[in-house]
Length: 552
Image (tube, rainbow, N blue to C red; front, side):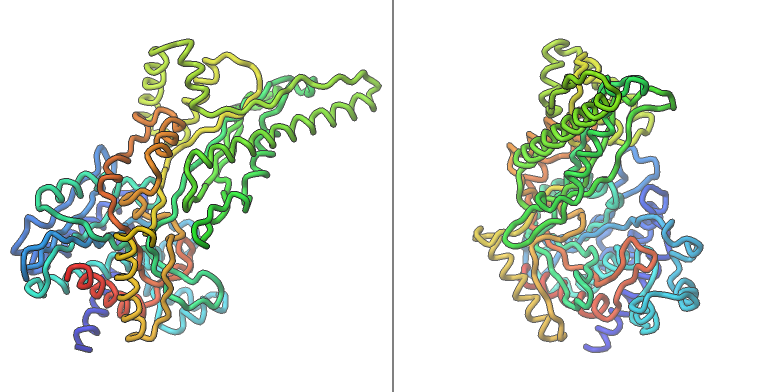
């Protein structure tokens, strides 16, 4: 038995290195190459040589890089059963700019590790490097190792199909690191397979990397759900003026800066659920919309934020952000008037309060105002603009901005304002709730497997509710109610054409989605690495134990 486990660990390590060796940076043909490698590995498993119809690739729709999802269905033969466990993960990585002069070695762990030994490294990194227990390199932790573990477990289970009932569905997806397109387009396939083979999806196990949550933390975490994410965005219309008459205008940059100050890292916007809290919002982009230099102040500005969710509805979040927007706007007006008063005093001019009024609205409110003036012509204008910009390859967030900008100009109101809207992506939040009898039963089974494997392997596990990094698991189960989703759709410009993700399909599938994951450190950093003893020895046991527990 020990030889079998040793062989499995060796196979996982070998496969991890082979996958890391294939550069599959998000938004490149490398994602197609790694898909082909995974498909080739599965096709060479004896079970799939006999059952080729159960292993296939599906190209992404209109994808310029030819990227593909990979599926493999393993069917237990002990007795007929429709119970199905999904093993899934993503195969793309972020880029390698952070490696600097080492970027050419980022996908070659052996060479990279030799070079790292020549550098003056942080003490913890140096200790891990010299131990020989870690694999360094882009994708080693996030998450080529996780895919390798799933593949090896799939192969091992395929050699024992006569000993279990039910089904294992392996799924590997590209485009996780930004738009989650791979898993989103997989939803139709999951539904097709469900209908074709009568599959009953009991659980989806993602293998995205886990890591220490604080210095010195050695626990291994299991997550029974995924944090949600939205991208609240703000179009700030000011009143342009010549800098020689600066108090005759209202600069949108000042409003935007106040808004950023009030939202960025605001812990009052951390969303809590049963003792677990999200990180606060982070500003991801800011720009004004003035293209060239002149002595006119900008007419508008744009900013958006990463906003994590555990439980709050879109309705609640909109109300909170509207309140903050109004407060930010109020502070700017107060500040501008105060400075104008001071200027009038030193310039010996008569002071009268400036005419600015706080004005905050949602995209939905703006759309309704403009629609009342233009009727169906408005939708034709928006659709035409969206199609043109998308065909040009414009960033999807900028497309949303352009739609809002067009509506604002069609509105023909010259009063300064903040327009709150949403832009892609939308990552739904989900978790297993212990007050729900069905979901609590799943939690108890997972805890049973975790406790058994933990004791047998001297590992300290902790079960938490939300995987803290963004995950493809978000798209397998949605806890947002339909009213909340509708409010999001109404405030994401031209949802149907720009970002029509199949939320209804997700709601129907409603697959309990957990995360085990290889143990790593420094994902998305040049010191990214995965810990071999846990990831290649203990983790496969945990996955296999869970599969048998749910399929028995």
